[in-house]
Amino acid sequence: MLAKVKIVDMERCIGCELCERVCEFVNGKPRARVRPTSDGVLVPITCLHCSNPVCIDVCPTGAIYRNEDGVVGLRQNRCVGCKLCVLACPMGVPDPDPIRGFVTKCDLCAERASDGLLPACVELCPTGAIEYGEYEDVVKKSKSRSMKLLRDSKLLVKQPVGG
Amino acid sequence: MRFSFMSGGKGPAQGTGKRVAVIGSGPSGLAVAGYLASKGHEVTVYERLPLPGGVMVFGIPEARIPRERVFGGCKELEEVYGVRFITSCKVSANGDQLLGDNLAKDKIELQRVIDENDATIIATGTWNSRGLPAENATYKGIYSALEYLFRCKANEFGLIPRKERIKLGVNVAVIGSGLVAVDAAIEAAAEGHKVRLISIEHQFDSPSGSYEIGRLKKKGVEHFERTVIKRVLGEGKVESVETIKVNAEIKAGVILKLEQIPGTEQIIENVDTIIVGIGQVPTPPFNKEYKDIKTLRWGGIEVNDRYLSSKGKVFATGDITTGITKVGRAYQTGLKTAHWVDRYLQG
View (cartoon, rainbow over the protein chains, first blue to last red):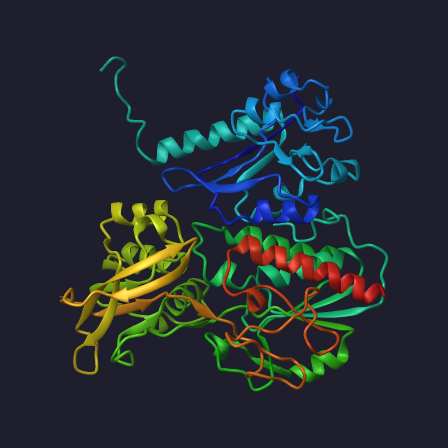
């Protein structure tokens, strides 16, 4: 079962690029990228550590793995740079590095995690849009938050069922 | 925001005994302070305003960045890492009088700060706004967007009385389509004014992104695109503006070519206030040049690739070296600087 999850609350994200920039500082190459959608909304594109990751299924060398915390990581020494994971990922998250010959992807700051630290983007997001924690806590939090948003927007009007 | 993310709030490394002064507590200043405090240096942050956070608190609206997160990070730095925050204290060496300088109670000479510390990092950012490039730009009723936002926030914090807020007229024209201009337009629209947005950029190549402009339009803001103000009309006070359409070539937010189209002049009647948000200029604590610290032509401080200025042990970081950027990039510059400062201090 998934232990830890990371989600991005798009209601709170302001597209300030801090996650991208701090990731570049910590990991050398940004593993989160803030890009505009066709509507012009700035969205951080980053690995969501899916429940059913297709990148693990397609990886021919077994370089992509999932550890006991639920983190989908990458062993760079096993990666051959075939880029199948880039094609398979619905968001195109893995970032091929043509010079060094392997892809890079978010591993929720594995080096920092071994020192008992949280991922850098989670620590520094100025709006708290990046939620990270135990699966149940995060889901509960995000559900209660979306209910509150619905209530505030008055979309939920008390109506008889079927009316 | 946990500025001390390098050590995750667990307290500083073994003390090195080196003293570091950071001038300015915006995103880049706090990045430097957090990184160096984690490494065990003794950090003092000088801030001219009564509260830390800089533009993150006094410019960007609460709806975007919740202040509590910024203050929480500062509090942790202060309590766990022993960073000294000296607020309401302006570090100066005959620099320009800036927005909100009247809130600073103390004054300290830049030379004294440099002498007392092993390294000094200047992170004062961009607080001067560019003026309106039009005729009669000195008329009453023309304000900069940053000043408008700053006074709104300062009033919300109870730092200035309500009468010192900028009173806008009924009809407001906001110039520019960057995030500062957009925030000012949102604030003015929320106060119930009729807002018009005038910018060179089209909705789809504006620096703030088409979503922000689209959201403004939904709030009833009228957007005049590919338009510049040619002349401000009125008698000593703004009454209406004469605009002209332009042809512009914009690539990745940079205006490459700009030419006015003759015969497309248009007069917009009933403009009471103009808010100008067309960019900001770096504001170092000194004017033009200070001893060996050189500035570049556009006002930024000259630094090498290790963010060391032309005078030894003085570093500069943030928007003052790069020009105005987003929070993220300013923070990254701060982290890179802090890395080099740490290397410099460790020898």
